[in-house]
Image (spheres, rainbow, N blue to C red):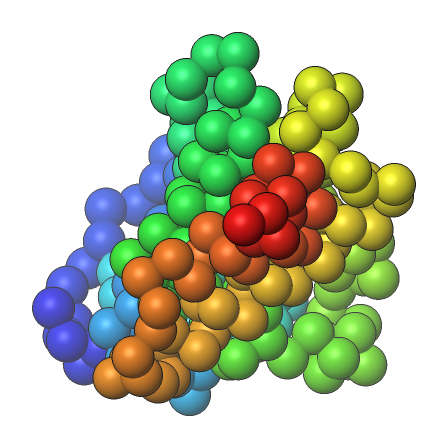
Amino acid sequence: MSPATDPGPREQNRRGQGRRLRAEIVAAAAELLDETGTEQSVTLRAVARRAGITAPAIYAHFADRQQILLAVVQEAFAELSDALHAAEEHAPSGDPVAHLRAACAAYLEFAASRPQRYRVMFGGLWNAGEALDRASVTPAEVTDLGQDALAVLVSALEGCVTAGRSVSTDVPADAIALWLGLHGLAHQRAVIAAFPWPTDIADRLIASLAHLAEEARSRVEP
């Protein structure tokens, strides 16, 4: 369905169904982003048209477009967190490094499979500074973004340290460094797709930033 497609009149929500309408507004905005890859497509009028409502009906749930985009970002981060948790659960039990690598692989897969959604999560389309300046969102709402997903990496890295598989001495800081490394790789893969990336580039990045002991030794031993 193109952004200009009008789905026609929408069945009115009954009393108490406001939450459903809010979800439909967020879903409409996410669809527009996925299809066009540009923030300019997410106007109140376009979102309303996609959701099958009138533009003024949006104001019962969102003050402006930035609040809608924040909701899209929050849902995307929740999806990322769920993906990391699921990857960990399916990793071989008793192997903390496998759990960490599975979570990292899930992160990279999420970025590759949802490129437009991933871009808006990290400010490529959504402007957190602008939203804060306009008081559309609170500092706490911005700070909380991604914390659940980061907690998965922290927990996985802690497991490696406890098992003697990582020599990290500052797990929270190293988990953030690992996140930044994964984000950088995901971004570069997206913008320089034809670059001849080493097949084990993700493994190298994870081993280095997570201070995995066995991998470090294997690189220096003859």
